[in-house]
Amino acid sequence: MKFTWFFIEPIAIVAVAPSVAYFWINVLVALILKFVMTKTLGEEKFVRYMRPMTAGVISGHMATLMIGVLIEFATVAWPSFQSLYIP
Image (cartoon, rainbow, N blue to C red; front, side, top):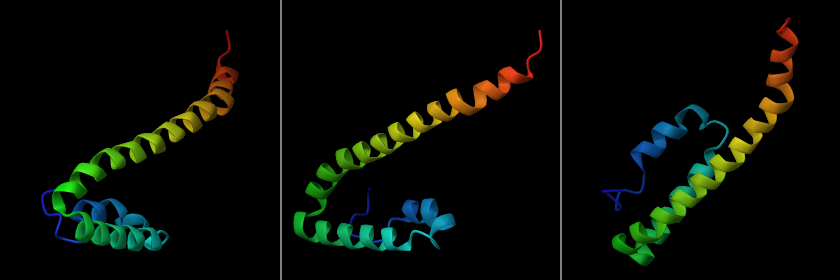
């Protein structure tokens, strides 16, 4: 995060662009929070506090997705694959 003064994160826009029609309120809340926290904490503290928090949120989200993927694989994909195998 090199330009913390810039209130719109260019990478976030690219990541959210396909689904902005559905999740625009999340983008708006994130921009407001980033603006307020940058103004109150300053750039250095903002980066120091938000980097671990962002990593934790992303890790937690991916962990829940992986649990869902494993459940889907164990209950849907693997049984249908086994039904195709004829010894």
